[in-house]
Length: 428
Image 1 (spheres, rainbow, N blue to C red):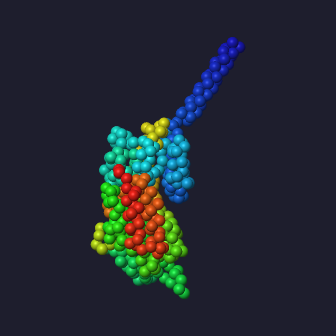
Image 2: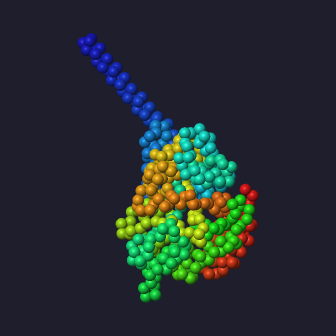
Image 3: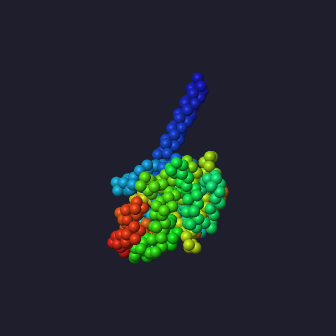
């Protein structure tokens, strides 16, 4: 009995010990989970494919981490939602941000400088499209506050079937804007006096300006240059597309801004034969099964060098984050090779190797064109300043719309733009 009792006591002690051990392990497990650093990551991109991309990046990162957990949130009201959170002191630790607005947030003290992190890391910026770093340090004395993630420019998307039907050769690198207009006229189809197929839609004004050799302001932002002959030629070209050539929807029934918004839908529905497509639209276009399509470079004007304006999304860290090291670790992953491989065709990866290997996979057949145009892109520098964007919204676009609606001439338009533009100039 004594031995049995002793055995029972020993068994009981072992059982209690194991129970205690499991409880400790369980508590430690919960503690580890609770003690994980949770980072809020907010993206303003709302297209389903874009949301899926950011989700994939976050999930892949979280799988590799023991001490960090990133929570993805989508700002359905766009950048304004993020700005509201910053103003309310509830900003995310890391967020997606368009390069044009980096300067503004730096001035407000809302962004953490990334230069020290970059210098102490093993990142080689020569593995990236290095000019992208020039964009994010513009007006910032070469200091880095935003890390390039994905970029894009426009290219000429065209419907091969409609070109074949009209007997027109496909556009190529030799195309001029005159070739563009001639093709658009032949591709505009009318039935019973009604247009059932447009040759094109209104191209981006900034692309046309650059193509014609014009800029809104000079490079050092001391003078508004919209009264140049190049700018006047560019604006007259835009007016003529509607008034003279009649190859785009009437601007009184469909504004130029609405044409930008509906361009991809009109192209998919075969209501327009070609248009200036943004590279982020290739993910959706690649899923088309009822259209044979491809892309070509932006047309040239009068022998000038082809030009386009790049767009760039970056990742930034909120200046008041409690976890700067962990936030940088996420950015380093998301903007590194492993993270950027998950972008698909929603945007062109900032890393050159990933861009050429992943993004350049057809369709379309000549998708490489979009990256080749990278070396021919240049920004409108005023768009990276607060006053520059104020000028665009309050003066430039207002005057542009009046001109396109026929309410004032090109000469009157540029006169007004320059007069008001000079008032917006600010010392940098």
